[in-house]
Image (cartoon, rainbow, N blue to C red; front, side, top):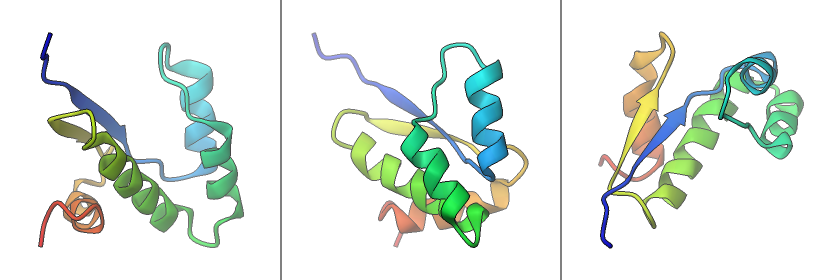
Length: 88
């Protein structure tokens, strides 16, 4: 069966946000290695953009598209897509 998939990409802005999602959002799990990456970052917001872009690149292997949930930072969507190589 060939079913088109759409990946949901959540922009992680802080380690606290990632932990909150793990604790409070049923069915969503942020891997601990990504939380650690955010915690070790001097600029977690920038790291969140880089993480989202990496996930988009990986998702392209199995998904036809992505839904970026930027949580009030829709101004960063273009940057995420550029880093993922989706936009020129």
